[in-house]
Amino acid sequence: GAGVSQTPSNKVTEKGKYVELRCDPISGHTALYWYRQSLGQGPEFLIYFQGTGAADDSGLPNDRFFAVRPEGSVSTLKIQRTERGDSAVYLCASSPVAGVVDTQYFGPGTRLTVL
Amino acid sequence: QKEVEQDPGPLSVPEGAIVSLNCTYSNSAFQYFMWYRQYSRKGPELLMYTYSSGNKEDGRFTAQVDKSSKYISLFIRDSQPSDSATYLCAMRNQAGTALIFGKGTTLSVSS
Image: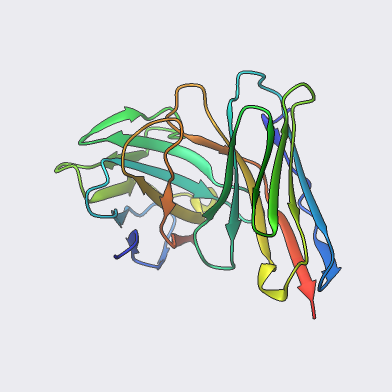
């Protein structure tokens, strides 16, 4: 079946602009995660959704970052007033259920460049 | 000190070599340990996961966890050029809501 898909694959924007990044999880997966991967670093956790609600948003760096998952499937990560330091690959992952041994399936990421 | 430390390499080996990749961590409460492989411009994919201490083998891959030393390893036997990738260690946080990753080690296997 289809894996996790993310759109766009690349996004170039200017400092101060607003961007939206979309994630389509694997069908039927209830848990969804966003991570951010800077160059030369491992992914860093941003937010975790169980169904429609954000069960853990402790990784969001500040209030310019916000994510939604209104129908418990597709999720959108929103970044306001983008800064050059926001440039990174934003990864989305989904898993069938939330639990300690579930497998997270990652999408290919959206490469965000803030000029 | 970061919660998970991993030498970024790069590591270059000839085809057929045995590769050893390692991570250390600081939180003794971590129980689930994973290795992910990430090819260039792709998302990470799960290779191995281990619960608590011990060894786990899957084909050419062996994962080891030593909780007393807070040290985990991934061994790759008979390495192949197709193994060339970045290998990320990861641990599930105590709440079970996120993975905490190392920086990743870039491996290159030459034919």
